[in-house]
Length: 396
Image 1: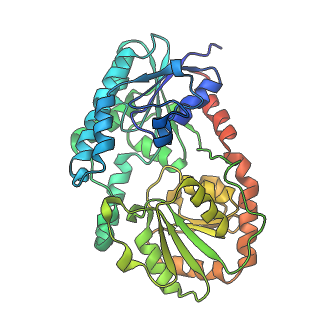
Image 2: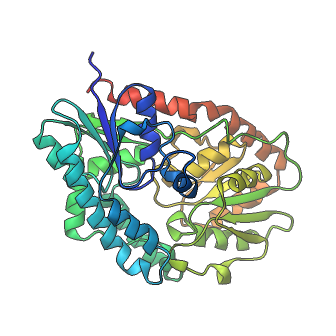
Image 3: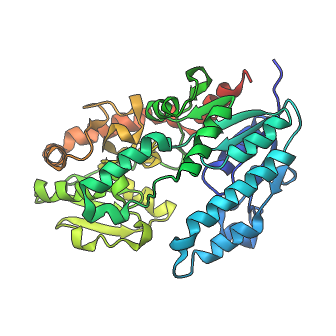
């Protein structure tokens, strides 16, 4: 079976560099298209490590719409950035897509794009005879928008932290179009798969490819001691259920336990008035500090509403943390109730309060869950992810 070249394209930083590197190591990368990329060890590569092309050969890297991305990167430091950034990034995505679709590869090759940034690329590439691969990293908007509207209505006090605007009809049509056009769709969880079918995808085009994490870097400490310490990691947003978690923490009224909050809030939302006794905000954490926080804690809590697959949960499990999470976290079979943690419903502070009390009352049980979670980590290593990714496109 022939192995066609795959041309990976992502205008930002989320996962594009990693996916391109995996295809490069497998000898399948035709080219990698992005807006900004810097050599490893260079001044800009050190300043923007997420944009360092590292394992991707320099000769395979292509740039488009760099000036728009520089405006976005530098503009993020200015007051009022949020008021224009969405429209600017949407314009960047469209122009980037047209350029890549018109220039990448040749007939018979494949282009590999990501959700919300592939419609134009797919249109142009299909006209040139290329095959189309879509990586849908999060719940599709046809399912996510109604759910987030419900979340905003349930807790108006936290709605400002959602970092969500409903798709305009034209934008929603773009996101549906990229699903319909794709020859192959990859997604990390069954919840995302179901949302794709709701958006009109043919089920036979979809492949489940759960994400991976660096299990050599995220690993357990030699031992854990003391009372149970909980951690919430990620964007401090009601999309991730933080408001209701804080309500649950207050209801649980745990004398010895502690809840750490690692991350920052979108749009400058002020969580300080809502943080109860025993909870502590750490701010945005570097990768090293996040690993140390996982190792210092016993249990990750993630009452999220909308994800694709929660990488923070995989990182925490690799570090030996038990996990209390919802089905919305996209963990499918990896979060086994009463074995690696607990599955709970979102939006129910009383249920979460009872789960927090139960975990805090039995540190030995939580440590056993964490040990089981760490033992399972090999299933979501980067190497395992690479094998799943290659298998998912093997028959194109």
